[in-house]
Image: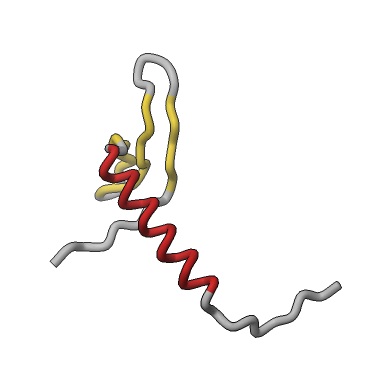
Length: 65
């Protein structure tokens, strides 16, 4: 069984530690984890599924103009 991971912040850093990192918290400490290509693809797939789910929701509230 895989555990769910919730992303607080996606951080892009430049300079000597350039790259793309996920910023999170472990036991009260801020940690930065490098985002791998596979990780980025998984996030993209998750966002695609989320967009499809939102698209399928019925519109309950009409826009107020």
